[in-house]
Image (tube, rainbow, N blue to C red; front, side, top):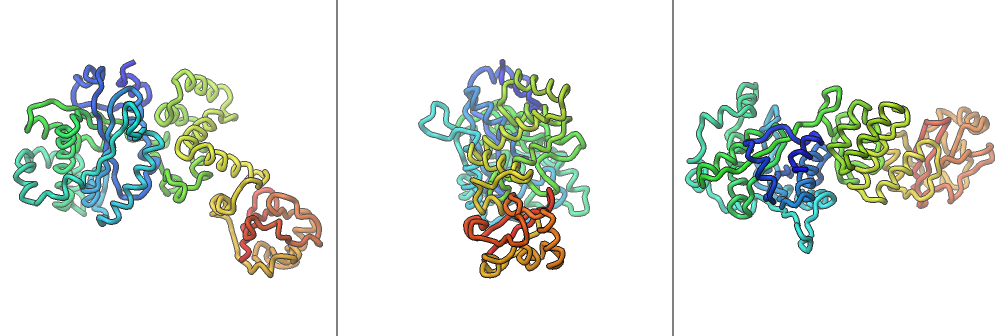
Length: 422
């Protein structure tokens, strides 16, 4: 199967600059896609770009991941309603390290591999450019009418905020990126989301004007769920690939909560599962949606790829904990992440160890009063680390504190409370 057919079958294709690309892809090409270094971790919203590069590498094409160290200092206006805050060079440099680590989970950068990917930073070729260089060597090939006709430019020009000259020049810099990679690595294909069409064609046109050579661009759809909401955020918060920003459990749960209407499409886009296996899961959604088998596979595949077997194990263990399972094997840091959004309190260790459980939960504020706390314990409604607390004579022991500092309390089935002993 031609890689273009794979892209179409997996909802990874929207448009291309020339039908000749289909034939060109029959032979190995050098391909690139860009990543914005505005954070030290990529997000779930970057998955489509990452997967596109990964599929191409697996098909024998050489892939280049370009991190926009220079363009990130300016800001891409595509899809933005207003100008964003500019990054410092130091911030960009720190972010590059995290981005390469994220990409390495999907794309092989090992120089010993038969077809290693390449990571480049466009700051390396722009840092020596002067403004005069930019105008003489690049700017003279761009036409104002074409630049002003780009959708991303027109929308911003018509908005109340307008567009700065800095942002307006973004397409010139991205266009030159393509030309530089074409001259340096023989790169002839750029990938990007559909909102990048204008920037991509700026590059293909620049190569044509300077060298008279046809190079290609290809876009993929921007992924939305069945309600029209842009993919990649949970309750307004971005889903990061770095566990320090989005814990294993939250990452796993984000995909586990995928709606039936979206899950098969997401399996095609975000995993390497064979299409035959996805067809089986589609049948499972149709005949037994309550089992949520497809969602489970999606969550497991992505969590394993991004966080490894250990991260997946922690995420699944956390799910069990929330339904009353054992806390064995979970570190205090894992529990802090799992229960980040539940009520919590800190007490001196001396006010916890050896003290009756009902007194401790009253002091911590889990119960409104000692009387309420006493009734909760008497009625068997209190659990410590998912184990029933017992009677009023139950006191906190050192074994109740995970790593000597944390206990997970629960009243009833689902009301959790995190107690820290300091």
